[in-house]
Amino acid sequence: RLPEPFTVPLPLPPVLAPVSRDATTDYYRITARPADVTVLPGYSTRIWGYNGVFPGPTVVSDRSRRTVVTHRNELPVPMVVHLHGGHVPEDSDGYPTDLLYPVGDSGQMIGMPGMAAHSDPLAHTAIGERDYSYPAGQPAATLWYHDHRMDYTGPAVWRGLAGFHLVTDEHESRLGLPTGDRDLPLLLADRAFDAQGAFSYPAPEPMRSPQPGATGRFERGVLGDVVLVNGAPWPLHRVATARYRLRLLNGSNARVYRLRFDRAGGAVPLVQIGSDGGLLTGPEELAELTIAPGERYDVVVDFSGCAVGDRITVHNDLGAGTTTRVMCFEVTDRVTDTSTVPDRLAAVETLDRSAAVTTRRFAFRRGTDGAASGWLINGRAYDPGTPIARPALGQVEIWQLWTDLDHPIHLHLNQFQVLSRNGGAPARTDRGWKDTLYLTATGTAEIAVRFTDYAGRFVLHCHNLEHEDMAMMATFTTLAG
Ligand code: C2O
Ligand code: CU
Image 1 (tube, protein in one colour):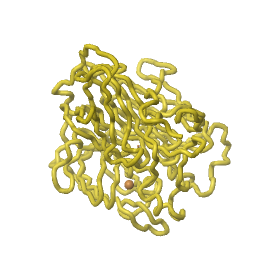
Image 2 (tube, rainbow, N blue to C red):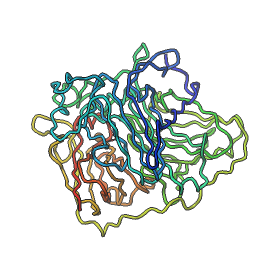
Image 3 (cartoon, protein in one colour):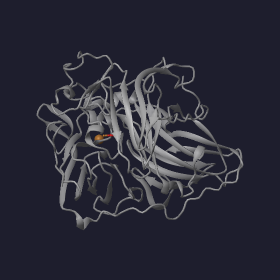
Image 4 (cartoon, rainbow, N blue to C red):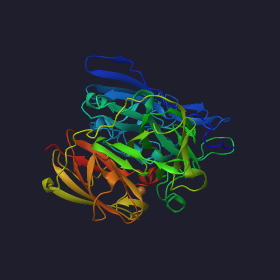
């Protein structure tokens, strides 16, 4: 039995404390393990969680300090952790074949048949634990981390392997934006459950062809009928008459939301202050917001005009039935708010089209590549061995993205800027530094990107996780300039 919407309190993921610190670096430990938690009231649900919770603990990094996370694998399967939106070297990026085998695995999983990831000669693999190092220097932004294992990302994230990683900096903290318990990370994810309250992932694992039925029945990816925010179904959160900063993250496998905040029939405006890669130059008022898997929107919502007792409901206008609602805020306290949203938030460099040295074209389409038929990039299924592009570090490039159906397209290593959509102007919500761009059916976009600092192997892919697992992913190799 599903709970009534807006009865379960909104959980906030725990903020992870460092295990140690030195002059330059904060050190953390995260153990991925199975755990039994309450998702639906009255039921126990087996998850795979970072430190046994879903969402995983929130890592908060300061821009001026390096962050090292020791990842430990106590799952029954290999894993690999990607910091989504992080500007990090290839050996800490979580390349899909860089498997971390479970603690105590003495090789029985290594070479397991049917797992393509085991046979990549360039992979950096380890057993039990390994350190991932995230350099200092990235501006304040809402990042997240999640599993990225080749062919199995969809079911692994569905089981709970996702969490926030926030970067803060001095500039942002001086702006006067809402902070503390008025700065809320919100991870949206839909799930389906069986009658015992267990997560039910209906697709075959892996979904790569020639698995029967993969592309047909799950062509659009795996959807659930329960909308979770921070792991709770349609939660309720009590707020004061003040501004709140909401760091919206779509951590769903495949569901796209169009969010609208509503108070007794009237829309409550959202003021966008940040995008995937950090703050915008200035705030942008929006009536609604479309958010696709992998994307983040940092918005401020002002409840100061509300009365105690008011309820503000978050609707999903792309949903149907149980997925039309997301969560609810209830105003319970009258306070004096001293937060502000300044007109000027950050200096954002503009990547200039005329500076581009290369234009590349990537078609995200269904097709057939040898024995593989499914979701492809430029007609090819994901193959770790063969890069699709070799961009030089430091150069601006224009990448043209083409899609047959809806695909949220994600690049590792650097954020990009949107130059055009469907031959015209970018959308209002395309401003700032993006790392995931949602294109709808037969769409095109041009983005400007400049890869910097780290030579090596990275990926671009569709962030519909089932599309990604069905091979809509490609390697690009950055070359030192
Ligand atoms: Cu959020 Cu390559 O992934
Ligand atoms: Cu896709």
